[in-house]
Image (cartoon, rainbow, N blue to C red; front, side, top):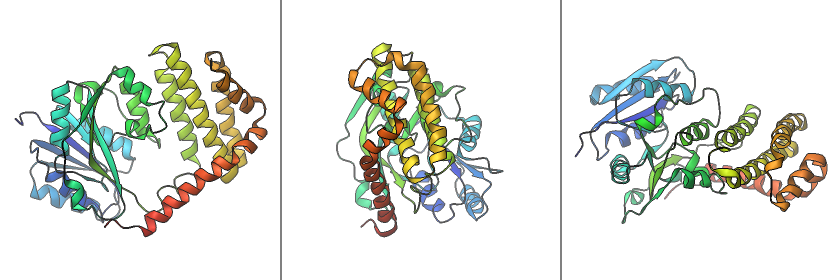
Amino acid sequence: MESEIISIIVPVYNVEQYIDECVSSVVDQSYQNLEIILIDDGSTDKSGDICDIWAGKDSRIRVLHKENEGVSVSRNVGIDISMGEYIIFVDSDDVIHPCLAECLYNSIKNHKTSISKCRLFAFYDKIDKKNYRIQQISENTLSNEEYAYMFLSDFMAPYIYVHGTIFDRSIIGNTRFLPGKYNEDSLFISDLMKKGMNACYVDEELYYYRQRSNSIMAAREGKFYFDWIDSLIYQYDSLKDSFGEVYRSKLLCKELNRMSRIISEVYFFTDKGMARQLYRKWICIYDENRCYIVDNKEKNKTMLYRYLPSFYYLLIRKKIVKIREGYKQREYDEKNTKNP
């Protein structure tokens, strides 16, 4: 039964070479009761014109042209004008499985959760249609607290992105993306978690995320690092009082360690002056919350960085170099690897 409208919001900016493939994958969804909102964020190429052509082909498509203000504002505009009981966000250079909306809708309805998420699949050029095959779908639900503990995982990325996710409109309410931030997804999810968000996780790759050239290393400069640090602080402040002292302690240690690795990367590969500015942010969080660190190993590690940062950098250098080499390898793959 397709009685409920799903709004699919697609921010669009200078993606004339990708937008057709993206919109085509949205239009071809097996779940047909869709409201498709294309937000042209001041594109200077033909993206806006292509959106208008699509709107002429399919009455479910609405196009809004606006000045360039960034993806967060575009998503917020989409939320404000949308009419669907459920909302999905799709990036304009990505592709979605023909059954994404149907699978996620069925999942969120059957399990009565706030959101439902699927696995992401990264691709470089073209999607192999073999990836469209769905085996028996496995699903599991996560309570608000269980979802929060995913933030402690070393593989937290799937849980902090809005890609491949359907949202019940009621959990979004008046929550909006924060404009001008690189890590807008994680801030948005953190805000929803404060409202008691629970989830269903669909163990199937239904969202195809395009890896574009120079997208990793080029982004890791300047404002990116400050926003990254600020997003980790925001996550901690948002969740620290929600799940007890044990969780607060673990989250604090995790965020402090993530921050110190980021600052170390800046120290070695970007700018030592910038690293000192970021380090001062780290000190503020540490000094204000150190009493919540109960694990002795974590106490020693964070105290070392607090009082002997230069020695800490020497100890962690090999690890940071290895991580950096991983980024470079991924860049090489983006430029040279093609999907079969």
